[in-house]
Length: 517
Image (cartoon, rainbow, N blue to C red; front, side):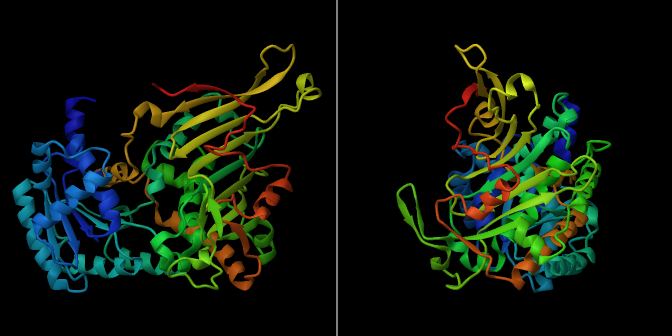
């Protein structure tokens, strides 16, 4: 990177960052550590400021103490360099704000002008709304009416999920925000799009001659996307009982990963061109026309009492703030089709759930067997697999068939692995670092556009509508298991099975590993 290019990047990140919800869990766990990492790596120069905003009273020093504790507990970098920390902390100020009082926003605007002058910031404003969705509209109106959008620089708003509860509520929310911000100024964050291996999907596909020619229905039998969690709802029972796995994970993370796998090559590696191709995938999703289609192709489950690693676990209905008769799903699996020329007939199996045995996010591409008579008649050949590991381990592995050592014609599955996170080490960049930096630079590639959001909600709403009509199809699974048996049966009917995921590999595979060390 040339010095000129580096200085241009640093200049583009110059802004006042407004963290609404600065005393909340997201700010403490993710946002403060992300900003510190960006500063330590030189991606934030000295021309920035951070304003923490929340209702509770706090002094600047108390706020900086909160940030310091956050970094000590959650950052991949430690704040053990006193000089570095003091320079960083100087950029942080706090203001108690009633978000329903426009006069408070006018005061915030006056504070912003002072920060512009102190840190030589050219009027750029980045508003991060770590708030409940129903507050997005009122805050946007008060930002406008309070004068904060009249500065000479750029203005961008970053919005956390959930973006609505269904398509009508998302549309209402979007209409409100569009009264204040243009679409190109709205950055709807899905932190999974900031993960290293999700962004790496494009490179794996389009930069390797032995993958892209095979990336179609002639060579791929099925695609499996798994996002599994070992935890239950924890302290989020009240929120989760109104949301469920479909809305909490399906509408955003799962469908976004599906679009990255299934999209066509973009004309350019530019944000709008990439997002155009992702929208085409969502428009090509086969809709479930009837409730029977949903019942056949979608499994919903809820964890019951069980155990994990010898520890007894309560059922979902026994969790705090959960209705004891709740039919909210903590698991769902679905068979999805992308009805276009490339993917016609290839099933995409997606699943996500809580209280499963392993925490992991993986994409498994299963290739069709060659049909070769040379070995197929004498051996039960296992399919070739390409596995993209997203979280917590980052990397890929490929499973092929090779000669079994010591035999004349025996065939043995061999897995060759590359571990991305092993190479980088524990300091793998966090998704929020990358996304905050992209938003400050105006790169919207890995943020969701409104047409993506609306198409995803349209697909998910059909499933939710069918579930409201019939609650008796809720399947229960023991906490610590891999979910309802119906999800396994869905694949078995097609002649497939869920492939083992990280930590659950098969015993008969020989591993050839490159950890990058």
